[in-house]
Length: 221
Image (cartoon, rainbow, N blue to C red; front, side):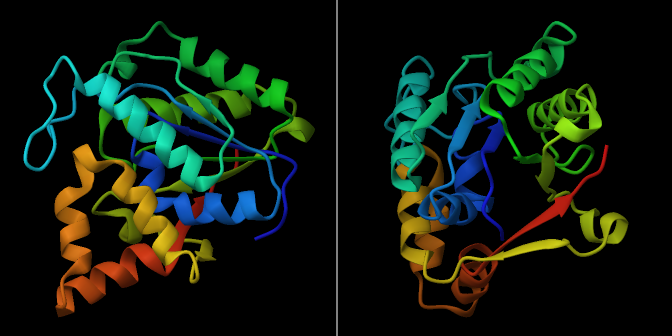
């Protein structure tokens, strides 16, 4: 993991950053690398309303906005951008809108590395629309100005098709910080955090999965 000039993170929902990449982002910030996080929606159509429920469909967007702000604070991100696209509709946005937004940020910020989802291997339609827009944005730039792509893939067939991740970040020493970041999204993460806290074999496997390493794929355009 080398120091970058600027890392741009693009995900569609609050908490997308917490599970798979928050240890990596924390390490970048501790290295002094500027990180911008563009969270495209408020995730207000998510099925979870808290455990037990404490949100309503009307209040969820404010709650999740506050949660991602706290998550960003814990990571150390000072440039959090919330463009406010409608949740669960990114695939229906005007063609080029997301691509141009991402391209403009790359140019504005002098981004040298992007962290996002891997197209075709991220399950949710909003994830896929985000991944496609990121790839299109990078491909639209001159070759020498294209940032490196460091992508998260987690579809069931990922390892069969893509093989093992080629970027593995050791986040040992960041376990407690990552748990705090995940806990910031309390409307969504209650059961997972309870599972991690249990004194069981399954809890140990979950901890090994989430709290020791973060795994990515590079992608060439």
